Each structure stands twice: as C-alpha cells, then as structure tokens.
Image 1: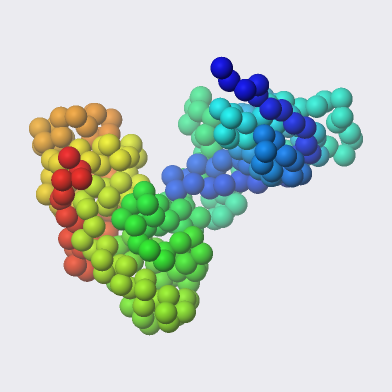
Image 2: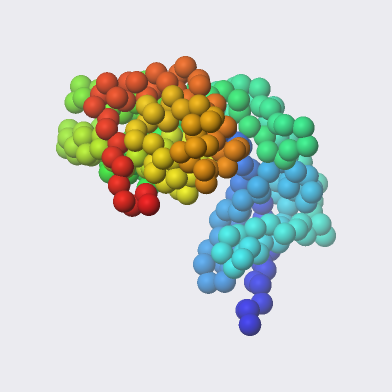
Length: 275
C-alpha cells in the first residue's frame, strides 16, 4: 500500500535558472513556503523549458505542488481560477545568464544549454563535481571556496588545483589554506576511477569509470587509447561511452590538463575497489 499523494497550492514567486557542469540550464520554481507531507517546500524543479510551456506557468500564479515519488517537490498544474492580471508570462532567456553566450538546443531536444566551455558557472560546477564525493574528494573545497578561486582567476581547470600554493590561496584563511593544501596533496594519489568520474567526461559515471580503471593503468594510457584498444581492454564499456572518452581526450586542452596534472605529481592509483 502507498499513502495518498499530498497536494498543496502555493504562489509561484519567481523562476530562476541553475546552470550545470555540462552547460544545461534547469529552471527552478521559487515558491511561497508551504508545508507538504511534514516538511516546508520553497523550491521545485521545472526540468526544462518545455515544462514551463506545458503548464503555461506564469510568475504570480498559484500552482499545485506534489512530491514526485514522495520525495522531490514537483509542480503538477496551475490553479487557473486564481490567476490575476498581475501574473506575468515567463520568457526563457536567449543568452547565458553567467557569460552572455547565445544559448543552443538540439533539434527536438528539450534541454537548453550554454555552449561556452569556459563559462564561469560551468567551471564552478565542474570543479565542485571533481573535488566532491563524485570525484576525488578534496576536503575543504566546497562551493564557496571553488567560487572564490574561480572568481579570482586562480583556478580554471582541475589541473590548476595541483599547482596551488599558499600565495595563491589568499582568498581563504591561512588555516583553511593549510588544510586545503594537505587535502590536495593526499588527492594526488586518489584512485584512478575517481579521477575518471570527476573529469565530467560525457557518459562516464561510477560504473564506466570503474570499468576503465580496470582496463588501463593511468590517465595517460586512457588519453592515448584508440577505439580498438578501448574495445579490447574495456569490453563492457559501451560504444557511445567509449567514443565520448576518446573525443574528450582528443581535445588539446584536455590533453594539456592531463599533462599538467602529471607534471604536478598526480599519480592516480589502481585499486581493488574499482573491481
């Protein structure tokens, strides 16, 4: 048996945009706080631009909110009877709110993305991913510190983390800088699959990263691997994912990043945890 899905009505105060590490913009509904199934809901994901159009959402509307799967707050409709002239239709932007690059979307796809790989918002999300639990786990390198380092121009790629010293870390306290440098030193020998998962290679999540770590000894080997070698060493990695890995390391900037890491003493370790 399942409990009946709870539904409440509240006002849509605004629609904001979250920019992910791959450049995809996700609209988020900012709501008047309302209690739903024992907790207070203030935000709900809108998934994509088409979702806003499908519901004809307007800022100022009263909307119905449910918990999708009894976990994630989701807008399931608009209380049109309560709509007033003050409700304003939402226009999805044509340019990235972080770098002003013209946004793009593939034909037939709902996702809208910023194609600028150097977009500061994307850089921050990629570094958070690389340094977080989804990557090599550098303690003390949270969103606030990442933002400070990117905004100061000190860090642009994951490789830049391994060239940091006390002089470059004046954006944080001396004690935090000392701890961060110690964590970075430890992370130079993090497991290979964690590096692979943290690099934001399209299609490479935990499972694919572990498979690649079983087939190769280090990042350099993977960067140099051909399609045939990838298929031979990692037969359980799908063709699409293998092609994405090869395409990622075919880019000169990514090859330079790996070379910088290696020169900075990064030596990812193979371990039984990958198996």
